[in-house]
Image (cartoon, rainbow, N blue to C red; front, side, top):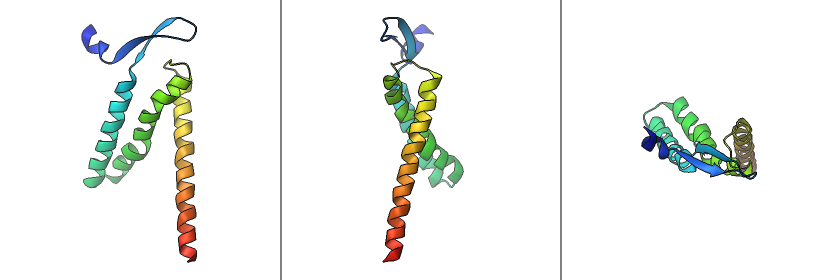
Length: 109
């Protein structure tokens, strides 16, 4: 059982020098790619709500979490998770604004 968890969990040293355990970043990257592919497959088979959920929400959160966790000192924490969701929503809203702006410019011509 310990060998299997070694693939998922790693030891790391925090900024203040204490040793902690955390989920490997590669797990989040692999799960984000699985979510992307699963979302596209679900969209292809007509499961629009589940496909969009996987593709538009779960995929970016899983991909951003290791980056945000790094900025919070490398620890798995609720603050890093909430920060990841906030950053993802801000990025998503900015993309939607730009798309709407481009569409409104296109309608004018």
